[in-house]
Image 1 (cartoon, rainbow, N blue to C red):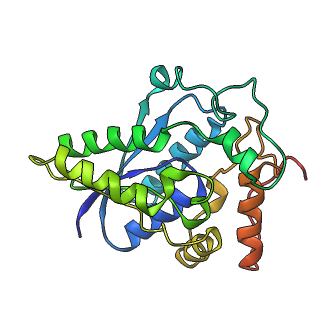
Image 2: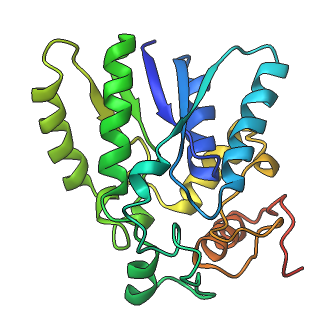
Image 3: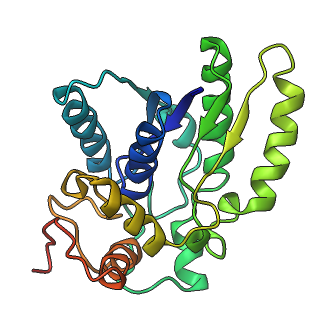
Length: 226
């Protein structure tokens, strides 16, 4: 199977994609971006997951890429500005606007493409899914198609394509895939807050819990609200 570079956040979606790629026999390298996110505990989760994989006799490269100097200038989101409160509710249009980091995925994917091209890797993977389409425009199929056309032109000498295998799957679909693969979800984090434990009440925590409930499964992480 082909070699790929996975943007691995430490969350459950990218963890499931990591497990799916390993199950399918791909050779994988992973990168985690530190963009100054308030929920930086997800970076620790990413490192812990990679250690878990290595302890099970699977070698995998993992690099943490520091892009905080860039995102210091893009700080009007609740994810990057500690003065903006993360709301405790389901996603709405207003909530979505608060949690959008402008152009984040395009910036991170462009960096990942450059890294992949420099390493001779032809595929970059990220874990966008259908539940994000109405919230984050850089998770939509048309965004991926457009960016791939730009990437095709910019990497003519070292061709790279960007893939999002879950782009038509729901969050519940992803959990189903992960449960079938045995993903250790206790090593993942979805919360947007900086608490030691996931809050359980922010939009992404709510979505996570609902995805497990729809699969008649128990989320193995502990929540602050409990």
